[in-house]
Image (tube, rainbow, N blue to C red; front, side, top):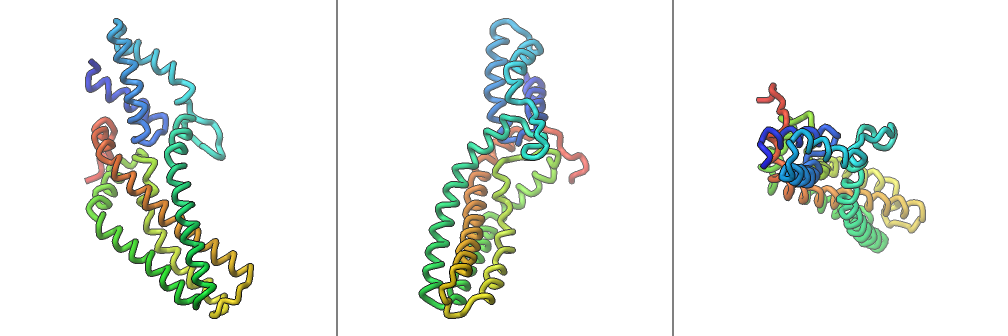
Length: 234
């Protein structure tokens, strides 16, 4: 069996490939199993590690692309997008439906009332989010500060719920440019629809990201002892 210090060495190596901790855990499980198999076949840890590192060299090689994936391994990019794409698609569908519904309402009724109702839903969402998840948000924020040399999760976008509230004033900004009876002007209609879609897509995206973050957080915390903590963090 691999010793704890050997597991720690392996995990730190994987994270050094600039992977988020949750992705590193997935790779660690595979690499540790391979190393253990080689050790069972008679190799010592160092030789088994080198053989396994060679087999993962291409996937863990840092991507030299300075524009789109600076300092990211190829595997990091593939794994991240395979996980996030499902959330993006779901958020886009829901955001599209919400934008269509509120745009139709805006055409039929007074624009200002529809805007207030839309903003009210988002404000209520943000308030409920912080009320129900305050303890987790507080603890997770502390972890991020304590292990500030690492990216803990690909789902950390879920912590970006606050910017959703920042988007709300934009609804009212565009309202001032509309006729209150909402004469159906194509340009105004496109702007209104696009803005609603962007806001609701962002809200839904952060919701699902945060939900996944809570699911993987306990697994991440199990591996934090293998990492270097910020010694100046109290």
